[in-house]
Image (cartoon, rainbow, N blue to C red; front, side, top):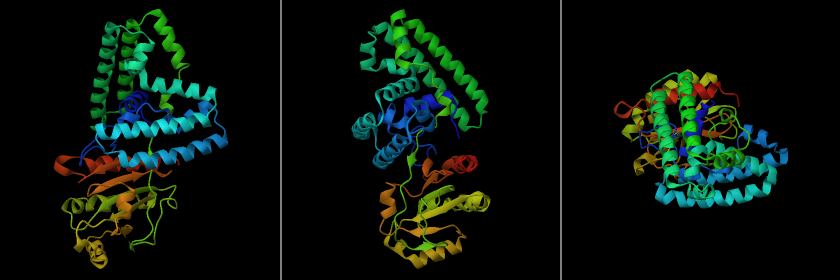
Length: 366
């Protein structure tokens, strides 16, 4: 599902790989990794960006391999606080962009930098290096910051409105209006030389509405464990299907509270291409009993595939930290949303929001 252009730009400028950070019962588009927000290595994976750069088949293959390595390294860092995670992310991104520079030619890389700058928007002018490059005065920085902060606050309100079901077309129009107001305010703060400099650095306009937010490649399921209700499965073999991967254990009350949602999704969407996989990672020694797991699954009518994870191989591969956790994997094998904790905890609408995401992913073309 394509994101509205203004919300996409906000998301790229605020944090990479999803939307805002969230807690145990937080957003299904949980993100983090703010330090990687302006990384060209994240945007270059998008097919629309690659088409703009005219990458060759060989370049696309190299970029794909690099992106898989980046995903595998970034994914375990997603929940770290900024102070701890940002330095690791920045170091990783710097290494990846160094490799990207050897894959793209100079023309392609220059155009990519222009697209990244367009995605960052005028907030990029507030970076120390850019402020020096443009020789911005304190008053100019103050005016630009006020304009950028106004837009960010507006996007925050629109994001909440979107979660409450506001029509996307109305939000799109409002977002474009806020972006135009921001543009007018920032350009009014710049002198003619600075305006020309900005135009040269951003290049011709690229339609960011064609770009999807970056998404992690889902870690492959580890071999081993006992499978219930199916033969052993792999995510590679499930390409073309939408997959719900949820971590749980039968002694966890919050996990049990999610059973109705899983059963509803399985019954409603299995025939439309949804596969639900329950990864049972025990919290206690008693929960390691596979026969007891079989009985619990049968007694609770859990008819979808379940695999025991007594050695925590999958828990570790997914860098999971919470019982329960629910992840949505799209048809191309990328994690598009996740939710930590009980879906409807204290009035949260996690089941509804995740169900809506499932329906949207099922409607997407691979």
